[in-house]
Length: 174
Image 1 (cartoon, rainbow, N blue to C red):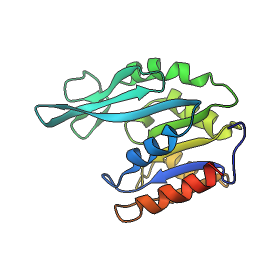
Image 2 (cartoon, rainbow, N blue to C red; image 1 turned 45 degrees about the horizontal axis):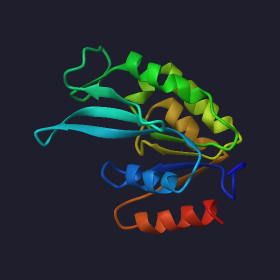
Image 3 (cartoon, rainbow, N blue to C red; image 1 turned 90 degrees about the horizontal axis):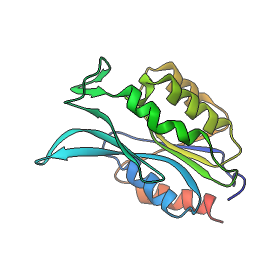
């Protein structure tokens, strides 16, 4: 996948639980060369206690949690901005045939200016870029991304996620 196909940067949005991450994983699973990260829940005894990022090379790092010491907070979760930035640093270097992906452009990640630089670099690269993004956000960075002319925004819900997956597959894998 050297250059973008019929659509440019792809953003997937929807309410929490709509399947954004699952859809992103299904799409990138089909792509051989990729670089980025997925955000996963951390659960202890069936209770969500935080979130971790899992990079394309398999590294796992807590992003936020109830036991993290940090002044950055989203709900009951404190965000480890420094740890997050150390892990994403190597995502800045990528090959021209790598598909780039991020899960998610959201509140926790946006505490990091370095993360915003990574998103901007991915959006302006010639590579395919696909990301999940907060549906409702007053953050200027998120609003600015959604206004870009080179972005295709797909809003999913539980009823249309298979249809959206088919549409994305058709566009990306012709």
